Length: 160
Image (tube, rainbow, N blue to C red; front, side, top):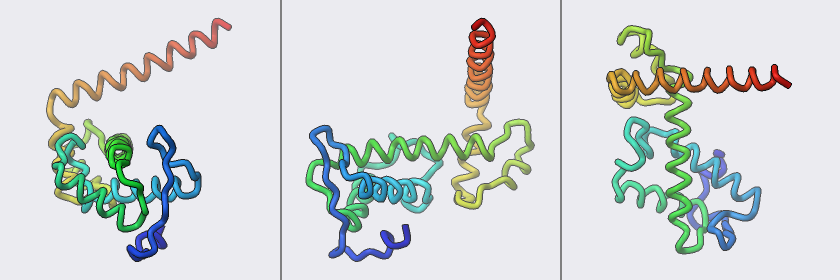
């Protein structure tokens, strides 16, 4: 990854896409995907405390332009890049919530559990959002649904 960050614009990595708008070369697409993931996890380039849909078109354009300084992308494939970013942002936010957020903790304890890779101001916004009553209801419903799925799966296995 450091080799990509240090890469000059004149040394961009060429990326080929198929007719479905997906990168075809495994090594290049892995490099592109990992680089995009590092951008998505960086609070500097992609704030984790807001939904991807709320990220301004200008900011999204800046992300695509920044990627184009490291990778030689054919014109017209911005849509794939943006969809991939949306997924990476969603996955990153879900991972943070799963690993670091505990609704049973006090606000002070939640603040102290700030992940090293998340900016403190963004962590506060996430906690504020997740501590809203409707977010807690959604969280507990999701936990219940997951436990129910496991119970049903275990029951099906038991029947066989």
